[in-house]
Amino acid sequence: MSNFAIDAVKGTTYDAIVIGSGISGGWAAKELTGKGLRTLVLERGRDVQHITDYPTAMTNPWEFEHRGQLPLAARQQNPIVGKCYAFNETSEHFFVKDAEHPYVQEKPFDWIRGYQVGGKSLLWARQTQRWSDFDFEGPARDGFAVDWSRPRRFRRRLAHSLRRHRALVQLR
Amino acid sequence: MARAMGGLVSLPAWANGWTKASVRSIQPTLDGAQDALLAEVVETIIPTTNTPGAKELGVHTFIQKMVTDCFEPAAQQSLTKGLGVVEATAQQRFGKAFAALDTTQRTDLLQSLATVDEPGKKDFYGLVKNLTIRGYLNSEYVMTNLTHYIMAPGHYYGCVPVTPNTVSAKPTK
Picture 1 (cartoon, each protein chain N blue to C red):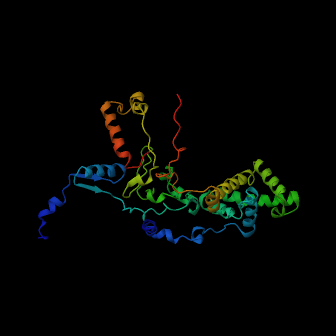
Picture 2 (cartoon, each protein chain N blue to C red; picture 1 turned 135 degrees about the vertical axis):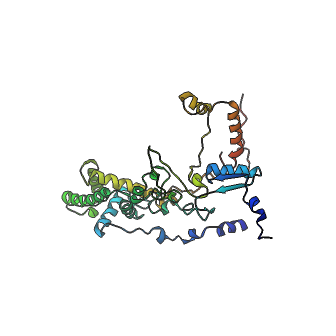
Picture 3 (spheres, chains in turn green, orange; picture 1 turned 180 degrees about the vertical axis):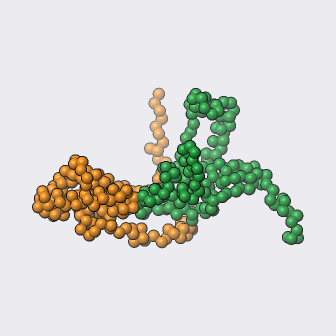
């Protein structure tokens, strides 16, 4: 029976396809699969295995050859990604180097990327801000983008969502 | 016990390959005399007391590693030139090598460099002092024995015995 491709269409048909496994894609995929949707996640970068692919996670500060600072040559070769505060000896392996995927900057735009499963979520600072009304009213007050302070049900939904996800990412 | 063993077994292979030698594969880049002189300079900045000094913790080697790999070529010249100035000043003012001076003379000499804005003086002293503090505070000895580095701080103790003192007092009206 295995020679008959009768299940081929079914096997390659998905309810949802998520492109990129970073913080947004990864989260979207989790939500979709949680609702029982058959979900395909596409990731252009390499796989990152938990524990074994974190080469510096257990390294003590004094064990880094330059105590965390990158050598001059590495910084000179990466003027764009080097602008990211986290591009240092402890985490440079999760950043896309300038020479690997160059791009044209017509206007200044520092495109900091992490091509791997988990994307740049592997590089976040494990801190997130709790927004106040003042923050939500910012766009309306300064006249840019959309007014985040209304409709009010949007904020209620966001608050609900935050409560739901807080435990998962261990925000306290 | 089983859980403790499980924790050990799941340690990744690369973590078992660490030795003192592989972690500290740092070689001096200055010549012998300058390397020894830099060791005396850092020892003057952070001397041995009831804790080890900068020389014993290899801070002078760390400085050379950092300046060679991470700094602009100008800093390397500043380091070499400054060490020359230190030795020359010692001979000129005291008629002795820097290493042969007593603590007061050494301190006095370094402080005099710190105030003179000439190549090989203020810039040299600033560079060396900065890296001495950094290398010392980030050394294994200091982080382990003095500042008590914890990789993941803020441990949550979920189960502690409750004594009457643990419960806060009733608010008075």
